[in-house]
Image 1 (tube, rainbow, N blue to C red):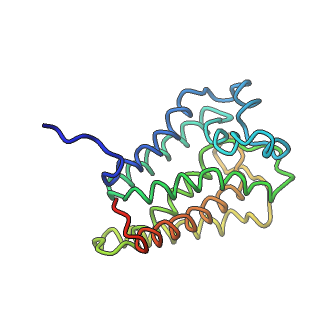
Image 2: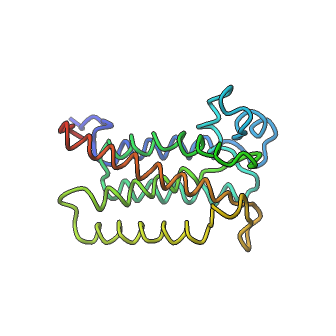
Length: 206
């Protein structure tokens, strides 16, 4: 009899989080007026409408913005599945998702935020830390974790979240909010560290 699918199987919970990011974003068209009104992150509505802590990730401003984020989400999802990340890694990514957006309150002059990038940076931080911290990982996976960690630090340095609220990368038709990337990396790393500590401390099976 075929083995029943369970979220405890390595990689499956990670794929579920990736699907929660991908599928609504795929369903919502770029610059959808209703989505921008009801789902986008807006600091003045962050506490009264807390669903925006999650829903902002699904909204995009342009087709290029949307497809770049969808490709990124697919890549992060596939990397986690290929690495057979345990269930507590997926919980860490899921926890970092709303905290990344909530941290945008630190930049009150940012009037609106949409897109997957902040949460994707959180996922990459979780992936990098788990590949480095989990015992028994092959050397090639530890090497990938180190490369990811270095790439994230380099990107944050070039983003300069401390110096600007928004900037538009060359060749793209949308602006980037550097604080979202920095918050994603921070909360991804914190959540992954706590999840790995809890897993070891309480010997939670995955």
